[in-house]
Image (cartoon, rainbow, N blue to C red; front, side, top):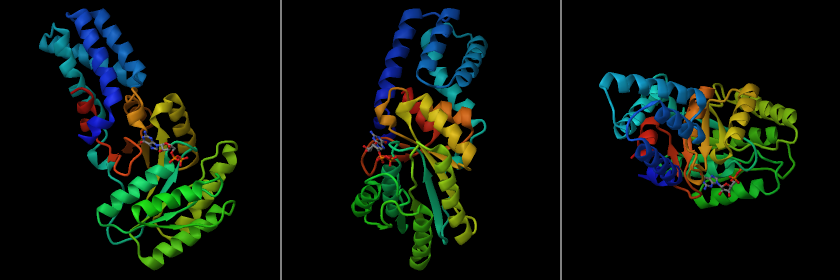
Length: 303
Ligand code: GDP
């Protein structure tokens, strides 16, 4: 239900266009498929996926002898789920957080995508699952970033390990890891800087931060989550490529899905990057973070 609500913009836009298309053609023909293809591409579903989908649909139409465009509509979601679940088991969407150990989750992404907010929301989610959580204020560069994380910490009721603005993020991470060990917390969520003015420096900084964590805790970080803003379309895709070339991204958090009618971007990211989308942001509030699930997502778009 939460999923459905958060996707209202995408759903409305999709439903309206689909209904128009179905009403316009009634009978299935080549023009109908062409327009359907266009519709899906403009919803940011991703060109290669759309091509696959259209091929599958054409075969299914032949096989079942479907004549009515209304009946094609029903097959679309079925086929989309098939395409995506083919090589993405549900397990992939779970965060790699194990009981009985300190788990470290590193968040990366450019400024403004919703990194801090996501950390706050995830802290809340983990806490409500009974886990103890600590936050590390690793964005020492952006003015106000530390305070913003502290506001979330207070709201959610978890502590924040910080130093002053401008200090070395690797030193903050070292402190945070020591504190997390001493307090025996279950999950340490680490914020990082997201300035893009100097990409090489940023990537070097991320590597340094990661090395500190790796050195202090074998097997950590257990997740490196890249946060992307769904409303930025192709920009998000470009950022994903840049970050995944520089560091080993283990999952994607797609934020602001509630703010776009182009929710198809989730599917494009899944197919083009081969990095699992693990979490989606569906609003600005504490509860507006959901684990991603392809079937749930696709069916909520078309129902
Ligand atoms: P950061 O610079 O990456 O840390 O980004 P912030 O966490 O400061 O978020 C930037 C803005 O996006 C803030 O106004 C957030 O409230 C907003 N935001 C973050 N996630 C979501 C989301 O899922 N939906 C909506 N509508 N807004 C979001």
